[in-house]
Amino acid sequence: MKQRLVILTEIIAPYRIPVFNALARHPRIDLKVVFFAETDPSIRQWRVYADEIQFRYEVLPSWRKRLGKYNLLLNQNLSEALQTANPDAILCGGYNYLASWQALRWSKRNRVPFLLWCESTAGDQRTRHVLVESLKQNFFVKCDGFVVPGTSARNYVGQMAANGKRIFTAPNAVDNDLFASRARSARINEARVREKLQLPLRYFLFAGRLVKAKGVFELLEAYGSLSPELRSQIGLVFAGDGPLRADLERVAESIRPGAIHFAGFVQRDELASYYSLANCAVLPTHSDTWGMVVNEAMASGLPVICTQAAGCAADLIKENGKIVAPKNVFQLARAMNEIATDAALREAMSRESRKIIQRYSPELCAAGIAEAAVSYFTKTTKYDGRATLSEPNMSSPSTSRPHSAF
Image 1 (cartoon, one colour):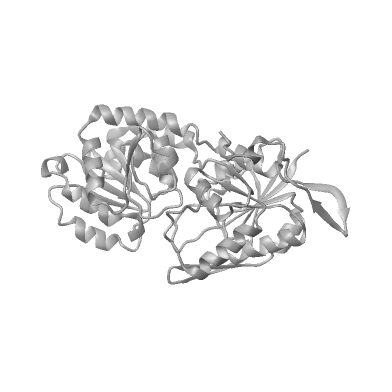
Image 2 (cartoon, helix red, strand yellow; image 1 turned 180 degrees about the vertical axis):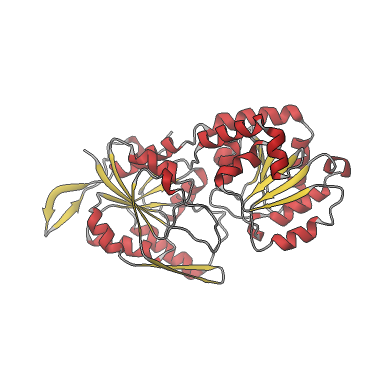
């Protein structure tokens, strides 16, 4: 018997579509995804790949306003959408929107299990406001269970909700096959692709928003501290846009020798070309709940340098790259120098990236979500007009220890 699962999430992110498609094919899940908005043009320029969607979904009417660093998003018709879907379980992707709290309240009123899909980690520096942390703690306490992408988020949720509630792992994933195949194609047509994209013969690649929290200034400083001889042989490419682009370009002009290229925002389908011809991907972030660009780089066969602040670092960075401290220019430059000057090391790291990322596929992510959903269910008997929530299947071995989906 299929379980009716409603997933609530902010926008139609390209990297979530393959996961939701895989989940819709799962034999135990009847899926509907409710998006709070189609996209967020104020900070993201992602194309909406509607032609790839193979799951039922609904986009709620919304109103969005940016207030400084805060993102206010208000929705209509959430209760109606949930009532129509009549879910056996709800998986909510976050706690920072009013709709998340409305959905939590709806679930309690209708006795439907409410699971939080949480990517936050102890290293997440986006907010430490006392009131915000108190509200967050209150939200966690009311959740019936949790779905996390990896080790760092699991540890954080364990600290926030240390009351025996179950935690399931759904490893964060991108479309590995898409990035791998497009990277292979770009390498076959290397000369043409390099000329079209105006790429250096060799380069480090940063992919992401050009904001301070991504560590972009430290990356420029680390590149500038490499020996002039090495900088004359290898460049630095920024694939992304953001409010600091002009400031970064001014700093880059002072770094000579060196080849620093600002590509602007790059859509998913072209991004694999940037990955494929790079020597190494670098994510020097100060705070990142995961870092999906690391998945993309690894699927494209790249070594990766990543700070320990990224949620993915504990799970994805092994023999395929280097982990450095955030804001530590010396460590970052040393890692860049080591990888840039050792071709055999780069090749070994590349093989490891391809190997590791196979354990982070859309299918495995979907399997983790499905296991969480079917572990909670509503009894068919009714009481006072509402379903009665039963306890999870306590015979599962994951009730006594952290659960892994792979």
